[in-house]
Figure (tube, rainbow over the protein chains, first blue to last red):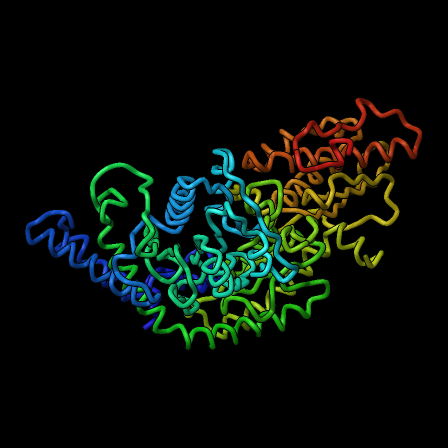
Length: 402
Length: 146
């Protein structure tokens, strides 16, 4: 049976937007269902209903911790990756500020959950340095090292980029931070369940993850926070999550996240092989289109991420024409984001605006099949051609060869 | 952000796509940095727009507004074509999301730029003059006089 429990296959559509969200595993749904009906106790209640719910949370905490090399009490549940990022960064910044440290090191390619949190801290008097990445979309650990000052409170660098899929040198950065005695947070939302993570070996102090990126439910995530770091609560309220995160836990979602994480980690090695083979097929075939390019490093990228730019066309048009052919992908063009500028990540790797407008992200999961890749490879060039045929920009490119 | 069915239909099957090699008037507006360029070609016979074609680089609404605007001026007199407004294009497409209104302004401008070019070439006086973008698109440095 197709494990995709959503209606994703109803219209013979192809879902290749797995960096946005994934279909839940059947085991995720199965694990969650009892918590909507039978096991509905409040985990804070002392009676048996409450204890059953609390047990589910403890079990989830254990298995998630185990799969990233942490201990159970280092895991706190959140409403998702965004909350985990906000929480980690704000908390670490405020903690360090107590000892007069108000400098933060990050990169230009972080997710908005990180970038906008840092911008807020800047308004509150923190100084943030956003390190540039190379044209390959990877920050150098050496640059992180050089940016750290005596008053550096925190280094926050994403594990893998959500748009171009590049994997950052997290272990190296972790080593640098440990050596310098600076807290290190990584937004591992795109990496968790897809890349092997060991917080101890990689010297990670704080790590954010989100369930729906690895076939878990939406609206739940976790923050790993090293044992000896005193996390401050963003909210005020009850004593849940050892007094660090008030609010009744989303028990079913937490249980579902754990089930999904176990399965995703178990499938990781096989997925890495199968997905990267499909990814490389896409890259190989689509780069045959004239004036196309791969965004981000060819090797150091997520197994499921293929990000392209096609000159002379605009990403939203490409996206919608693909959608009409049943291919559901994503673009970093300004039009799709609802802003006027194309993706900050594409600009950060040095692409000019006009090229960044023509971006397409295809992100795969273990539910994708080689036949789907064949279909994309067969369909996409014709759509690019159709849009180029009506593009005055393409006409100019062809004429002038610029 | 949701597009109307009418808009999607024009995007999927845009009318008047192409070029006119011996056009009587050509207008191009927008820039690639903003993500939209529209180029409109017109053929004029006895003061009537006998043929019109367009080339557009841009999002779905840029393509659909180009298609609709060109449809709306085809067979019309120069005077009638000059009275085309972006609002009329938006209405004809059953609405545009707020962030996409600038596409309709661009379509109106492109049509008027083509007519202005025709008037310029033929020494005719242009009634009203080509409409200038009124800060519809903040990213567009061309319109900001940059």
